[in-house]
Amino acid sequence: MKSIYSHERYMFVMMQKIKFILLFFSLLAMNISAQELPCATQLSAKQIQDLRNFQQKISQNQVGALNKSTQFVPLKVHIIGNNQGLGYYSISNLMQALCEINQRFAPVGFHFYLVQNVSYINDDQLSLGNLDAIFDKVYDLKMPNAVNVFFHNSGNQWCGVYIPDVDVIFVKNSCQSPNATTLAHELGHFFNLPHTFYGWEGGSSFLEIEKVDGSNCRTAGDGFCDTKADYVSTRWACPLAYQLTDPNNVSFKPDSSFYMNYAFDACQSRFSQEQILTMQNDLRSRGVSKASALTSLLAAPNKITPANLDSGVSTKRVLFSWNAVPNAFAYHLQVARFGNWSFLNVDRLLSDTSIEIDLFGNWPFAWRIKAISEGNTCSEFGQADTFFTQEIAAGTHELVSTNAGFLYPNPVKRGEFLKLQNHELVRVTIYNSLGEIIFNQNYDATIGIEIPDWKAGLYYLECLSNNKRYVKRLMISEN
Image (cartoon, rainbow, N blue to C red; front, side, top):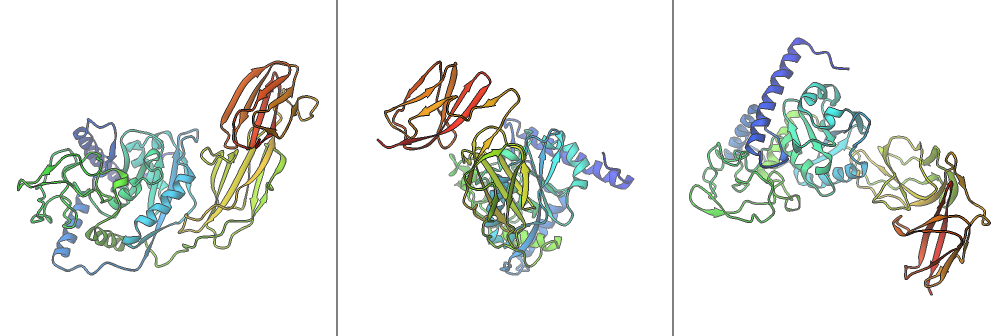
């Protein structure tokens, strides 16, 4: 249901929406050759004026030294899918992203902590990053007195954006994969940092051009004297492949190490001292941080069910349960067929110590769990346990007796023939321990498979024939 606004709020929203859309599309027009803007952030006129005033205080030695104490900053995460609940940002990527931003902001003295569990939003337009939807809906969705980050699935407007008028960050899922710096970049904007190439967003400067000698560093570019001149508003590999020339005809290349430039993610590693002072000043003005939060690395929970090597677990409403860990903010649960953690069947962040989940197929599954504190998502998973499911679908008979299909010898040695007695047309598929198909062939009558030079270990053999299916564990031993 659409929010009901007062007349004043409605007019404010409409004016801010128009202002941002005009800025956004003027920026888009200037970068029309690119399919997607790395960052569409445009700081407001007030933010720029506040920034210039603060930079003048730095020049006049009216700003104290860097704050050495850690400030704990509340972070609220929203994950957006479409109307059908598809396209969510993965919890695995989120946990790593939060771990990484705390490492990147440690020199700033900021440590982000989760104020609530993740909120899931199903909305086609927000999933696309639609600007009208953002202005219309995020006032009611965001949490006050916190940094609100929304992860969305699609759209080609940006990789990330900080929208000052609603004070939220939007990040496209694909742009915050492990080791990406999009979130760090947008958090820099949130705390009032412009791009290092400020003024060059359209490819040519609309401001005074910064000189390499630093003589106009306060009045040109981003206004910081400890960030080198930068005129490049497109993505670039480091070092830059060509030379830039300043107004004094001095050739140079920009510094690729700053999070607020457009160099590739692997090039970026820091904020400058003046950028840090600016962010600390902005955080003080917001008044949302606190002096402490729980940042302990927690031990992994003790798992209860399913038990390790439990066989015959029904696929319907599998109960996963574990013991509570003191001071745990939440638990990160993963389930993967064959224990292949690159392809997860379940990837959830949970407040409780149990959950029932439907799985599918007669397969070996592995599961693992870790506890996280409010300020530390970097804990390690505990040991994985394996269990085996049985699923009986309508019209399908699981063959469990050896007289229906006899597999021998088992274990089998490399180079030997594996035999399977069968009297119907059958498809045989063999999977390795990672769930990868390494053999797939149709047979009729008695089956003989010469085992090639596969590594010794555990494999899984699946037989399908008409309405019958079964899976058997197959051991291959050394010769």
